[in-house]
Structure formats: structure tokens, C-alpha cells
Amino acid sequence: MLGREEIDGLRLQLEDFRQSDQRKLDVIQRLLEEYQELSGKFKNLEIDLEVQTSARREMQLKARALDHKPFVLVLVNGDNYVFNDELLKAGTEGGVEAAGLLRDAVQADLKSLDDGISTRPLCGFGSSWTSEIGDRSEQVRGGFTRGQPLFDFVDAGVEKEGADHKIRELFDLLVQSNQCKHIIFGGCHDQGYLSLLTPHKKVDSCITLLKATTCNKKFRALGYRATEFPAVFKSVHLPENSNSGIDQSAHGAHVYDVQNGIIQPQLSANPQVSGHLVPEGTRRRLEQVIYLNTDSQRVDTPILGITEQGRARFWHRTSHQHLCNEYHLLGRCPALPGRPCMYDHGYVDPELILVLKERLRAQKCKTGGLCRSFDCYYGHVCRRHGCTGGKGCSFSSLLHNVDQGVISAIREGRT
Image: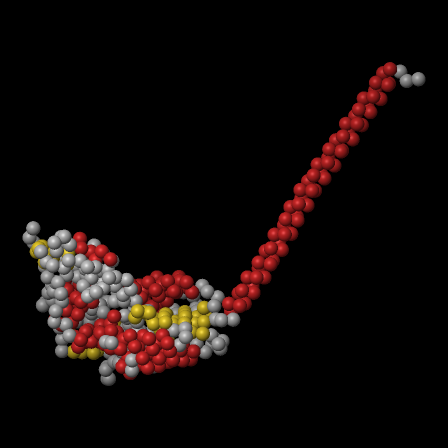
């Protein structure tokens, strides 16, 4: 028979067994709970995987569908890319023919691309065209737009930034598109586009530069392929027996250098037309007076004495190289000391000076009627008869219907 101490020892052992079994049960219960939690997460992951797989398949189908309609984008700034004379003179028919010639030129130039790629060109319409072809400008635009279903000829107005803004936005929108297989860029006359093209520079590029009548040499450094469409756009004709391409006139010379098929304006060797040095006889051509109306707003007086022939001569003169505005109007050049000016310093007759003032007046002054700068050659009110703003006008609604009667004047050097 067991003694009391032995019985107490057995009771302790039994309690230990019970506690050990309870711990085992607790572990099993915890494992079951964790399993259930993991099982739920696994089911959720299965559902997510199915959704992601379905979404990826849908995106692949959409991407394949997009690749079924690839296109080539042609962006052209019309300020320096002008249709050939015979196309301009033909009006509507010329616009239709220009559209067909441009499409044929693009397809012939990009033979390496697959057949069936549609072409989407856009032209920014510059006011310089209007001065040469007058009322036919609208006919040419309409014919070009109707000539091909995906062609647009956009009238961006007389302000330079109008066409620039549209071209930049379209380029940024479509350069990364899977459908856009190639871009032909017509803006090599304006180095402002360098910042747009530089980030996309690479050896195997989908961008081709369209040569302009004048091309900034910095575009060559980008390494892009270049092409030209002489059947569509005007080109510069150099005089015979001239290696340097000097077109001399009675009052000055326009110098061009031909490199790699690109006509690049060069500065005269005469040090008087570069940097801040100004030739003798160059003088200020802006009035040193500011006219104010009854509300003390600055107003612009009419510019008289301009003929249509003068506007046409101005367009012809500036189609190769723009004039240096400050040089011709203020008698000084804004180029940094020691660095040549890229704009034209040659002789300009009085009527062309008037046309230059007229074109600059069509661009609004940032200060508007509050401007008191004697050096400002921009417009301070809209002088277009019947204009209320909107498309083609750079002036805000506050600068329309302004009283343009002169009540007082501020003269430079007087208070």
C-alpha cells in the first residue's frame, strides 16, 4: 500500500501531465488559427492574381489594337517653312496639291517603316505668309486641310508663341505614344526648340529634322537624321559661282555657309555688325514719347505709309534671317559682348522699318497700358477694327475697345 508521500508525488505528476497536455492543445489551437488566417490571405492573393492577369491581358489586347493604326507625326512651324510659289499662287488647288506632295514626300523618305502607316502633319500658320499671298492664304489653308483626311493647317495668329505652344504640346503628347512610329520635326530655324528635342537624343532615334530655309547650327550637334522636301517647301537659292554663298546688295550682304546640305546664316566679317558695336549711321527709330489717353493708359498711334508691296518685301527679306529688332529700332544690339548676333544687321529701308514696327505692335506688351518704357516697341492696345479678342489676337479683353484718343504725352528726359 502506497504511503501518503507517494500519493502526493503521483498527484503532482498527474498535474504536470495535465498542464503539458493543455500547452499542447494551446499550440494546436494557435496553429489552426494561423492556418485559417494564412488560408484567407492565400485566397485573396489568388483573386488579386486573377484580376492582375485579366488586366494585363486586356492591356496587351489594347496595345495590339493600337499598333494596328500606327502613324508618322509631321510638325511644321510655318514661320520658316513656306510652300513653293506655284502652290501659293494656286489658292485652294495649291493647298490640296501641297497636302498630296507632303504625304508622298514623307512616305518616300521613310521607306524603312511598314506600309499602311498614316501621316499626321500639323502646320503652324505664320503671318508672314499673309503678306505675300493676301486673300489666298485662307484658300491655301482650306485646301491643305481638306487635301488629306489627317492633315491640319492651324492658324496660330501673328504672335510667334502661338505656333510654338501648339507644336510643343503635340510633341510632348505623342512622342511616347506606341502608335507614333516616327516624328518629322520642322522647327530648325528656332533654337528655342533645342530644349524640346535634346532629352530624346539617342543613336537610334525616331525623330527626323526637316531642313528649313535657315537652320540653327546647334541642331546639327543633336545628331538627328535630317531631310528636306524641296517639292513642297521653298529653299534658299544661292548665287552661281559663289562658294561662300554671299548674296550682295547695294546696301549690305547676307552671308550663308553651306554645310552638310544645311544653309546656315553666318555673320559678316565686319566687326561693326557683331556684339554691341553698331555701325555709324545706325540710329534710334522709335519715338521718344509715350502717348496717354484720358485714363492714363498708354496708347499706340497709327503706323502709316505701309504698302502691300512693302509687306511682301519684308517677308522676302526675313524669310532667310530675322532682323535684329533692337539694333534696327533702338540703335543697339542685345548680344553679349564678344558673342556675335544671329540676326540681320544689314541695311533696312524706311518702309521695311515701318513693317517691322507693325509686326511687333501685333504682339502685346506684358505691362499693357501701364507701360512707361521709351524702348518698348510692342503693342499696348489692340488696334484691329472690330476685334474683341480670342483666336488670332494676343491682347486680353481689357486691351480692346480702349479709348485711343491722346490726351497727354510723356517725353523722354522730361517730367
